[in-house]
Length: 198
Image (cartoon, rainbow, N blue to C red; front, side):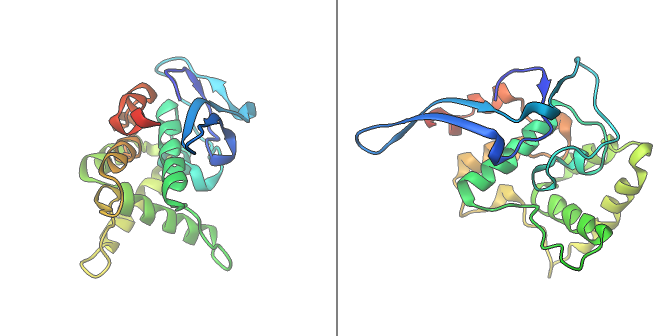
């Protein structure tokens, strides 16, 4: 992760390569990390976006990529946040046992998980505003799912997962805002205290 201008809509665990050294005491020291499998990668000039495609593996996609809305570098940051959750907690947020489910049912499950884990108020508002008329059906689905959260079926925001290290929760929450404009940059993520000991 760096201050780069290339966009890689296929961030997932299999595409992150880590060069590390194991110390005599068993500690792991990370030397270098690179993203590979760049056949879908491209350079996007500042201010421009890719739109109209659901790029990358569905289990690691950003909300805007799930919606086939405008995607850019912040989309990679969201995907990297999902990879961090998987790496540290062994949880794949968007893994769905789709056996017998229609595509519409699978999309509804994805939207519900997005809203449950990452849908704080400002992020949700920004995300809905990000979904322009070209993806109105997905925007309508998001708005349709919101009332499904009740006192008996509440949201489960990642920022409140008490069993997770506080600094890890903080950096991942900042990487996984639903609103791409609210996500931290790669540089900001690497400067976060949680990454200092890695």
